[in-house]
Length: 161
Image (cartoon, rainbow, N blue to C red):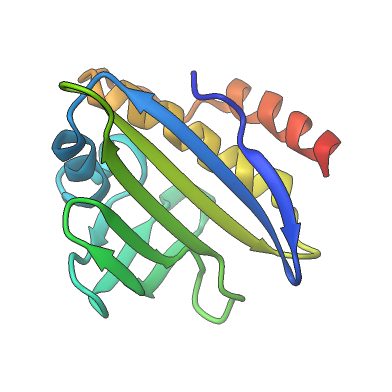
């Protein structure tokens, strides 16, 4: 289970910084972040473009959230940034950074920014749950959205905010 995110407030946003160590090489983690065949295993069906300005489209199905965005920062195999926002919503930037962390291991950092005044605890708990699903996908284990984990982390983040 990933450690809870570090939360801080900045001007108009609340920011969560997740850091997760994996016993998998950085290129395997990267492929789970960007390969359309792997995205549904832990996040949502769709695509994350692999170039600056490339499209991002993710359909979270049952939740009704559809992300239509563009890549705003990109370093192949290392960093991708885009907004986690539905059409017409305020920008909610996500920054994914993957780095090697010893032989055959890696560290993933996810920074999530949510506009002040929104339910940041819900958003952060959702990404926390998806990181739990990513850990399972890296082990080739299929899991459904971990709703109990989501509820526990939402309460934790709400208390911090």
